[in-house]
Image 1 (cartoon, rainbow, N blue to C red):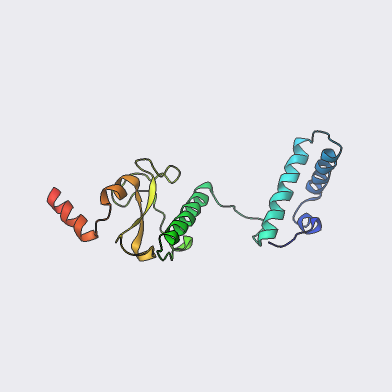
Image 2: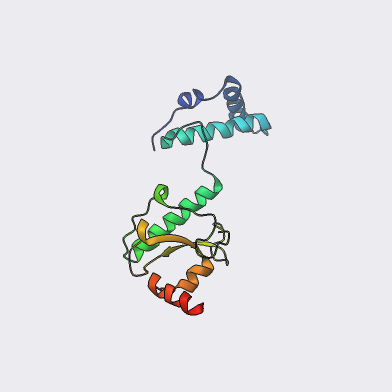
Length: 162
């Protein structure tokens, strides 16, 4: 991350917001409770500064809570895969993030992954690596029932059940 000066951040703020941010800092220095307007300006200052440091656009949409959670799940899967000695070549942009389980059709819950309909990564062929072609998102229940079956074994079981 690069160092960002206040002057750089102020380029992206209105005059009222700049004055509010300065008032907020002055109030804190003199141990006075800051007003809500100056607090909002200070929050915007911090947000703009953080985005400038990271090289992100200062305006525009931020990531949704769901996207943040999906990125976190992918990061955790990359780390656990590497610890297991597996190759992990998944990128967030290439992944398909379904709203319903492709197996049973239930609505996926990305925030509570250990519940019945919690979203989980599944390797289609369990002995292979985490690649885009070998990875899918299933609900906890379907992933648990599938266990380490290959697609052919799962098809034979489904045919037997019918």
